[in-house]
Length: 375
Image (cartoon, rainbow, N blue to C red; front, side, top):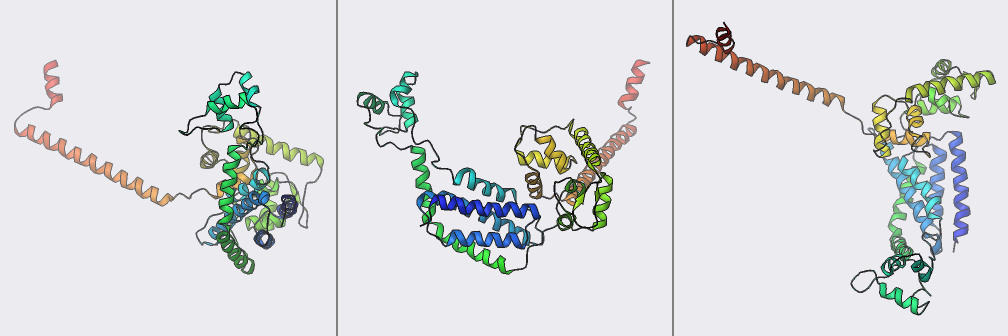
């Protein structure tokens, strides 16, 4: 049976391979598909101790999110980031921040007398320990019993939040078989199938050129563009590239100047940016994109309030942005304009009709009557 420590070591190795893949390209390719297949096989053909169940279920969640991304990428009308989805990578991060964390909740809390000495009521202490009476109310009587006879209720106490979590985990584990069958089938099919070819990356070539260590070959794959297009973009931001594949700058001075130019550009652009702090992160990124800001500008603007935001997260969020049907908008606008024109015509005809009736009666228009009175 695989222990939690063995699971931690194995996942660290898988994570190291993921980091190496990110350095090579960061684009979902054959090597990533193979990596995901091996991860699926490893988690699906082992017996794990209960302490490791949380981590393995987090891996399942990541693989499910990856398969959802791959399914969307295979659709002709699918619009996805070539680097995977934000949901997918959030699930991967959760393996290490949550899945491998044990215990999830505090195993012990302060003794009852200590809490009471701090001014807490019996009911407040009962709430901290999770003690309820038959009616579901916080049981202050148990606190009194604990004060009178220490250890009565705390000797074998377990955090109720941890108990509830363990029960949910055990339930998910018993239902895991169906998840495994589906994941293994999809992973095997994709391992044998031609690699998914997502569309071009949404960021501009100039922004990719500013990434540390990126190569011309990687940019070509991400943007599906020619070397000449990359060279032209490099010239625009003061970079030069060598005849091979690695990006180089002519010297330290030019590196600093190019960086300063880019920093000045971004600072000027984001100086007056309304970062919409009251909105959820996804809505903020989409709204700033609608205002014409680039990925780099959005990242720089939001880093003041979202300190752990990364370039890849912004790209992934934008890749999931719904596409607006501008043609429909134009049709709706034209239809609205047509309704306004028809309404104006009706009002004009009605006014002409009133004037005609007044002329037949020898009457005067309101404006003529006013003029006559003033005279």
